[in-house]
Amino acid sequence: MRARLEALIEEMLDGQILLAEALSEFEKLYIKKALSRNKHHLSKTARALGVHRNTISKRVAAYQQESRPLTRAAKGGAR
Image 1 (spheres, rainbow, N blue to C red):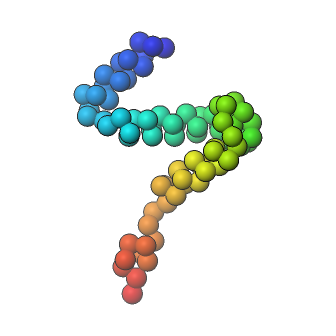
Image 2: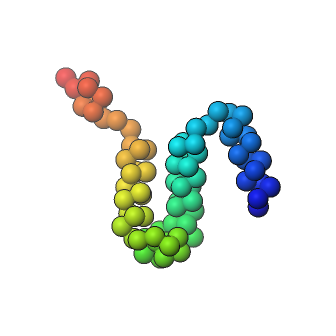
């Protein structure tokens, strides 16, 4: 696994991915995969990851907020 991670890191560095972006994407995918394995049960997922359920809940809410398209009013284009 270490060799695969090192290869991925090399690829990300070549693509000039910033550390903050890499960590954020890793966390997001890690949590999404864990949620999927636990049938989207927050408490079971939190236990599996060793964090509090509220942490998972807040992160999931933030991910959902990121993926929502802006409404016309939020864009400043309301008429």
